[in-house]
Length: 77
Image (cartoon, rainbow, N blue to C red):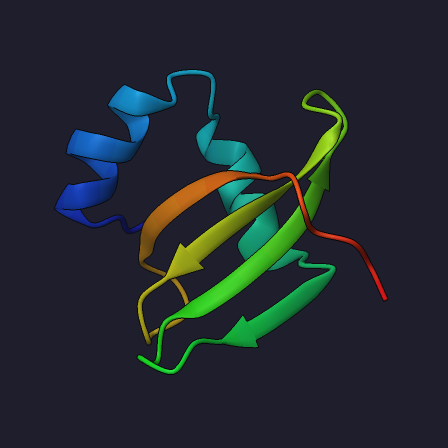
């Protein structure tokens, strides 16, 4: 799994409860994907352990993880 320096040094420190396998699941089995205006890609997946959807943002390549966080407002439409 590829990650950015930001993810390793900032995101994981701020959110130590995040598991890498959750992020990988979001990329491999998303319930929804969306491309941001800057080209980065958002992937959402439901994490039962969190009881919430996890949003994982990758770089344009779709595999390098840049950010991840529980998305309180996400709803499947």
